[in-house]
Amino acid sequence: MWSVYILRCGDASLYTGVAVDVARRFEEHQSQGPKSAKYTRGRGPLQIVYQREVGTRSEACAEEYRIKQLSKADKEALIMEGQLK
Image 1 (tube, helix red, strand yellow):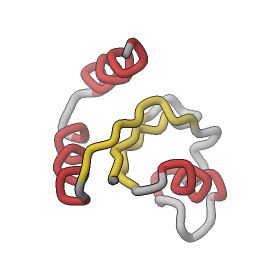
Image 2: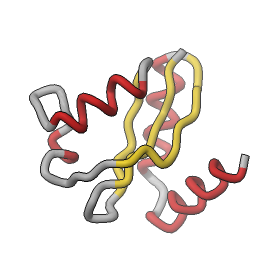
Image 3: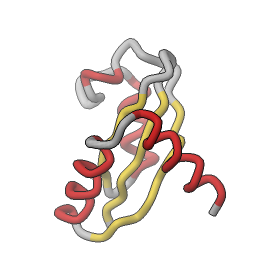
């Protein structure tokens, strides 16, 4: 099952990604190594603020794209909505 997730970086910016194992992917981002996203390197500490199981990789990538098109205010609203559930 693929998931879409949002990380809050130390500079308050947001990073959106997809993974089968979000915890493992988060550790890769935290390590700042070659498997981390370039965007997250040097922007720690990182925090998972949103995570949702989506289904197939294709569906997860479509949802990631949709989220990336949102304004930061809309992403913050999505995060808050996810925390209320």
